[in-house]
Length: 172
Image (tube, helix red, strand yellow):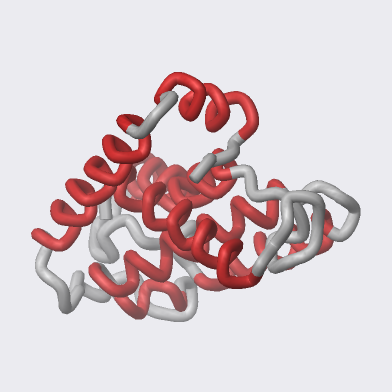
């Protein structure tokens, strides 16, 4: 997936989990409080923000299509554990970032290099072997863009954008 697709998939998944689990704005539920979709969107980009510069400037190795530390299950689980500990003290943003990162590696493992989630326990010379064609990435990006357009053409688009930017909330 591309960045817009990752953010839309992560925020959509978080919204669905919140709706299904019945998480309230004040507390409880899987996210331990209000969902700040800005944190989820940032988490959805975090694996690429870590791995792309790592491959470009340090490893200079594209065998895993830039899937290394940030795309590993180990990284996301450590981030999730720390996020749960911090959320227990009242701030769930790191938990939401971890959730976004987990959705990123889940969706990437479906379309790119499935076993890259086990880095560093796999060899670095594993070739790209996603079982879905690259057109799926483009389709995901187009669907994400359509979802954004629909979201913002509904009544009060400026208020919706301001609510997301200032508070990280999505009014449905």
